[in-house]
Amino acid sequence: MRSASEDSLGNDAWKLYQYICQHFLGTLSPDCKYRRIKVEFESGGEQFQCVGQLATVKGFTSIMPWLAISEKNLPEFAVGEKIEISKVELDEGNTSPPDYLSESELISLMEKHGIGTDASISVHINNICERNYVQVQAGRRLAPTPLGISLIRGYQCIDSDLCLPDIRSFIEHQITLVAKGQADHSMVVQHVLEQFRRKFSYFVKQIDNMDALFEAQFSPLSDSGRLLSKCGKCLRYMKYISTQPARLYCGTCEEVYYVPQKGTVKLYKELTCPLDNFELLLCSMPGPEGKSFPLCPYCFNCPPFEGIDTFFGAPKTGDSTKLGKGVGMPCFLCPHTTCPHSVIAQGVCACPECSGTLVLDPVSAPKWRLYCNMCNCLVSLPEGAHRISTTQDKCPECDSTIIEVDFNKKTTPLKDGATLHNGCILCDELLHSLVEMKHGRSISRHGRRGRGRGRGRGGYRGRGRGSNKQQDPKMSFRDF
Image (tube, rainbow, N blue to C red; front, side, top):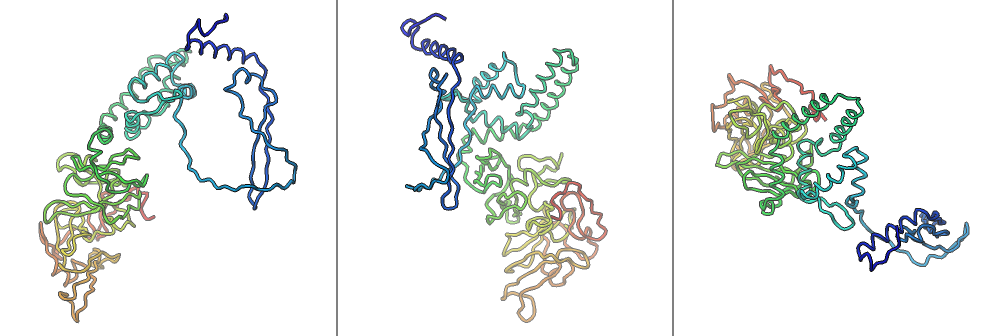
């Protein structure tokens, strides 16, 4: 290269010329050498250290000063020497997340994972910039945009393989094998096309998850939502968006959880689900005889148990086991053995109308009642009682759950003014005379079918006589 001046090249060209010359001369210069000193000392039983460094030969850094080491001179110390502490400070700080990737760092990672070639890597980076998935910031760092983040979150929710480098790396590897004559071209093309065809079909079937995520992120509805309950993953409050389809949106995790599309939803006593730590919601159906039931937002959308016969909110015609907007598993369908809100804990007896279970309505006081977790059957319990709750005891005759009733002192039907009574609503004469069927056939102690809890979660019968309980091999939370 010939000699040049800033006047002949111009400002920008002169900077480039100067950098190239400095870099070239730096490659011909000797190494930079420095001395590193580490001093360790003790004070009050705590160990401390400080490090200093001093350049002895500047070498190429005299020509490329931006690569020079930062010198820090330390005074001379002797082993065992005692020094006086002049000042003590206690600093408090927080860890900070790593910085965004620069273009050079991204290129290095792409080469590491076998993504792209020397000719195509720059095209890939330019594509994500033009499509507004990332924005180039100072220092040529690529900051992801809300669009790019939402797209990746959607891929992770539907098919996480689509946002991992494995697929692209596999294809690049197969192409290399074809070029070397170690793989058949037609077989590689056929395999890759079939793989993407299946992934595309699955993605289309799950596209509602992507739509919900984009709507919650970019729609003004997300701004109008109100904070309702805590997310069990990040422990931040989620927004409740009442506009159809009703849903919860966690802005931190960027996930959407649908809730029942009818009725009102509110926080349920700040109680949490023992499976995932999400705060429970209380859903109240419209009408004077509508059900009220708790639900966990995560379990409702992602049931942790398999073998469900019918989900709540499922259409009467069609597939009743398919999850969707407002279709899921409330607590009255959950077979968790230790959760106080599950059908195991709150279920009382079999429904006389269907294969469901009559479950205690936890917030129906003072007009206490049972409702079926499958149909619209309602059973009124003694009205005006202070408290009605299920117990762990079973009726020896029908295996139904024994309930505990705390009557009002003024209206108690018990002798001598007693208020507390335990019994089975089917076999106890007093309780059976006080219950009333609101819908369907009346409850009878003779000729009733499906004794016990009826059909619980997972397609198994309850504990009644003659029940043939099926074991779910993936019921990992059972009996823990």
